[in-house]
Amino acid sequence: MSEEVKSASEQKKEDWMNSKWRPMMGWMYMVVCTMDFVIFPVLWSGLQAFVKVGQITQWNPLTLQGAGLFHIAMGAVLGLAAFGRTQEKIAGANNGGANLPSSGFTAPSFPAAGPTAGGFGAPAPATGFGGGGFGSTPSTPTAGSFGGNTGFGAPATGQVATGFGGKPAPFQPEQPVI
Image (cartoon, rainbow, N blue to C red; front, side):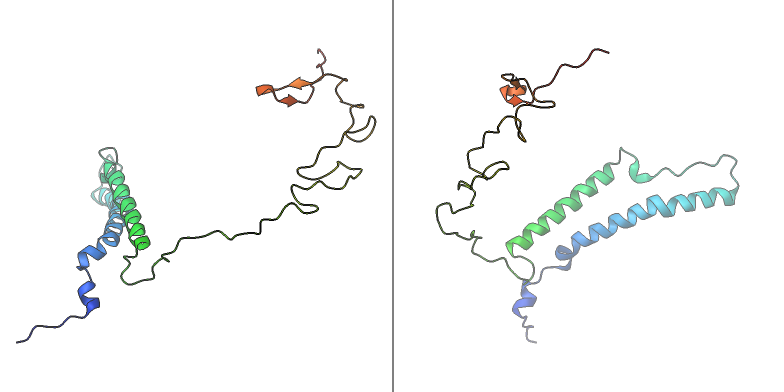
């Protein structure tokens, strides 16, 4: 009898255990948690009620014994399995699926022009409200105008407060004694 000829895709396929162990671990963990936290407590309570035990005890989850090491281990196994599968997909080992492009991302280039009128580095036309935009020299307010140094809550002339790190800070008037 002649040997069977396998196609390239069939030769490429792995053993079912190698390809399905991650989902099987997830399903097994879900079944164990469902049994230990839902089914067994209900059955334990039903059994105690059926037998008519004088002192009813609470179900003690088996997977939480030993400081919950089972859940910690399963979290590590499933987390590393998910991370490993993600790395396999990025590397292109996803059973014939789409691969990432081989060329890297390049940022779009912009023309190298100087600042234009109204741009970030350009001086803006002088206005009556605050002066120019980014990069322009700040205007000096006049006394009595909006933003000036006289009026309600303004610091006295010549008083500059410094905050943490030596940076200028708003002047804090003295608080009244109560």
